[in-house]
Length: 486
Length: 142
Image 1 (cartoon, rainbow over the protein chains, first blue to last red):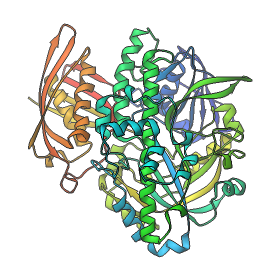
Image 2 (spheres, chains in turn brown, green; image 1 turned 30 degrees about the horizontal axis):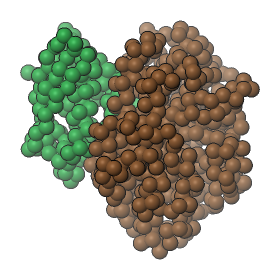
Image 3 (cartoon, chains in turn brown, blue; image 1 turned 45 degrees about the vertical axis):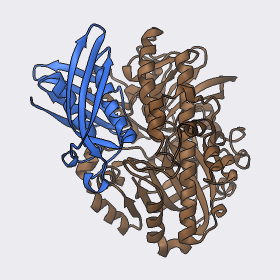
Image 4 (tube, rainbow over the protein chains, first blue to last red; image 1 turned 90 degrees about the vertical axis):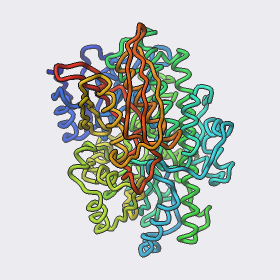
């Protein structure tokens, strides 16, 4: 039998996993009772993948600061749990491939239109169809931006700005992307030729799996001040683009998983699981890895930038809107490792913060937020399922104090893909959603079955737990009208 | 030779268990499982050939090398594979694999695409000889 792991309540929607075994810090889980029950059940089953054991394993890593964190959308990943956050001391700590994953800087870009729900309601079919035909998605799709060997390095160094320079999007988009759409420290020589070659045709493609593009409307305003700052109002039409760094990020992850696994034995690190391949932050291996992650992150920003441009061209065709009438609200990733400054026990410290299936969620006053949002904290995007709501939330002071300014990123899966594909049928999911006012355009019916709304936790519960814990605050609730899937 | 593969329940990703009466057969079934996660295997014609040569200090590492080489081809040459042959040699410093995969470029209308596999993780990575033959397991990030 596996060691019994028990979470103890320590506050509203807040539970502690006491230190045991090789844990250097406790685990701290932000979740509702139902999620906690599921975490306990997984952990007691030796046959199941367990997110709580992953929280425990992360707590064993050298140099971890504060606690090994899990947020309300937690579920099992590989290495870190999904919804997992780990911050590491720059001298004592490690960079962990499983703290970022294969889809480096997977994230969400939100575009706000000047259209209202009433203006588009009878055109959703044609708008959705045009978006589906305009934005490449699905297995094997190729993007608009074709690159040479030299050009791919520009994407890795310059991120979204490179795409804007090539005519994809607007200069003013850049100020509303995390890190201005370009993370410092990117070094293309740390990225393998194989990773670059795999990416040539993929900039500006959506991918598949849980990636999506949604046409949504603001159903409810929950925080009027923040909504006004973000320029969001009732019934407004917005577009959310969820995708990542595509094959480039996947190959960087694969390459460094191997390199860092070797580093574990080279540096004699005490690591509980092979899946937590890592290296001391100051080592050559970790420096190269973080420089490669920055490249992957910049590629993801460029990818979402190109797709944002395609969305604008599509809306111009179907709705007659000028490209500059569709504004970038924000663009933020949820698989990343970045050096940030945080207050720990009253002391300012620079830490390497890994967020796996968690978004940075900085509260009021942080200079990293775009200037118009700085007084309120920057927005974060919580993807629902195809049929349910999504949320725009924001960072809070409580989140800064307890989660290194981190937030939830989605509803979180409840069923495995295998179970979902058995339980749901793609055509039925599509017709059921059409009946409830959501048009689905998908390249893969099987993909739709795996991503059926019933395969996910209730997003309301996840948002509710984040609010109850005080780590994120809901700003607006969004409802989908059309969903584009790979 | 006989063998099989099956998907295992993993909430976010895709667990893969391949069995074979030899190590090579288990690796062959693992490759079939990898592409079955992305397309309908039976509809992939073996028209084009790709050769793989890889090495690793461990047999588990060799499984990751083999699968990630095949996976990269979907972006490099656009090929998806349905048939595989391979040999594994044990060496002083580990293991070496030489193999051939046969397939064709993705045809979305015919291949019934599913989700794209992003990578081969180290979670649950296991290659073992049991009383019932060889087992190769890994979790694919989807």
